[in-house]
Length: 325
Image (cartoon, rainbow, N blue to C red; front, side, top):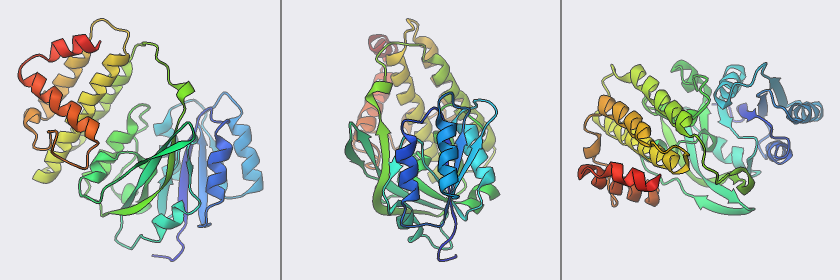
């Protein structure tokens, strides 16, 4: 591997003019300078494209690309993957920022056999950081699904046809599945330099129709299962994939029902059960489900999933969902 390989940083941008300066400045101030920053403007309706164009005039490492129609983060990232010239690819969201040594800490640990490098990160809320660790464990790379805390070898993605399939919703989760079933060489480093910013003003407490989003999540999972169901997966990968499906579809169902304005919650349950029972008929007995199991998992998720499994076992899940709704 070259001592200073080119790193392609892909930034999907949509109506992000307020946050772009902080994001782009953090990229251009990197101690590792051999980068190209591919900014995909998803047909923003604000001044994001103007801001990108201005940055590109000042620093040629900024490469702005504007999509003809608003297509979602999946298409934007896929466009970046196609355009990337670097040996490695990194994703940064336009409303987030990274530490000055972020890229160098990843690159300096890479070797010729590394396909993915994974690190910890911060959730930044009201300008306060909370560390979210990524334990050095074989299962962590299944449970920390965000592409923004990883460095990917470009050849690994392209040779295995790994991309976001242009999906608009929940594209990160299935993208990670697609990576992990291809048995990548993963390195987890003891570092945190990515700041995932949460804006309280962007989160509404108002009930809304969340069924389309959850249905999109189900459809993404269904499509991926169709991709791989004929493959003979090693038992260890099958077990963690079964857990991941159960976890994501169950937690997603509970979250969306709580936010939904629909009185009939059973459609969420039907979508979940149909896919899980078809793809993983024994999912309720998955060995990773339990309050004291899979310590790499977030504690609150372990707890909720274990409780739901028990309630489902005694056939009271509909009562639980009714109370939640």
